[in-house]
Amino acid sequence: MPLNKKYKPNNHNMSFIKVKNKKGTSDKTPPSGYSSWLDFWEKKKGTKATRCEALSCSGKPDVGGHVIKDGEGGKEYILPLCFSHNNKSESETYEAWDADLIAVS
Image (cartoon, rainbow, N blue to C red; front, side):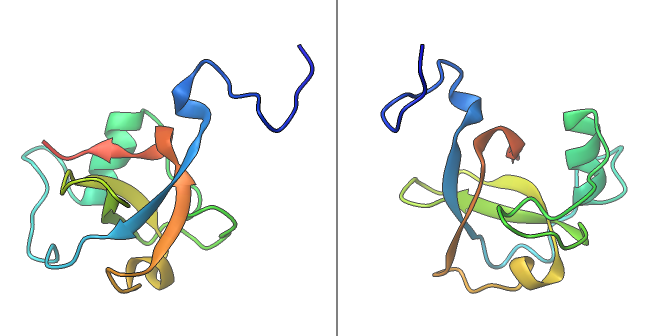
């Protein structure tokens, strides 16, 4: 099948979405067994974070940032972010791969 602008892969995890930071999460501690929110993301994904997961950013993954999907309720996710993306205001959106989001229970 030729690729065109209307083609969407069957695997919804291959899409990117708009996210924004969830504020007021700096005192939240990760679940027992995880040393940080970045450690939580790495263990859940089964891989080491090598860069900020905001699309088009090549910064290093400084933290496991708390984000929400733009336009969705308050379901919280963890995403490896550089300090610059982690410090964006909650009204600013940026893009990330949907498959890179790890839900916080």
